[in-house]
Length: 76
Image (cartoon, rainbow, N blue to C red; front, side, top):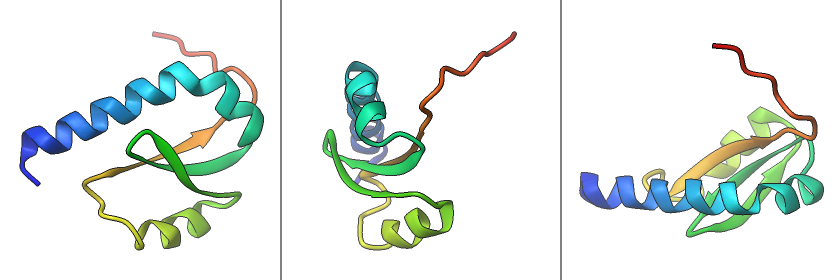
């Protein structure tokens, strides 16, 4: 997979996550998720668990995200 294809896969997953975040955080609150092709393919409660699960997938095509149930305050 070339760099542009990796970037595009990442961008599509981020966009999909952003659009679906509210419904996903209800279903996967306080869990780690693996996204591939705009789909949640795995979830786990612990970081170590989700990292083991990533081995089943092509690292260039997935994204790992923690689904926070409460909003995060960011200060710049």
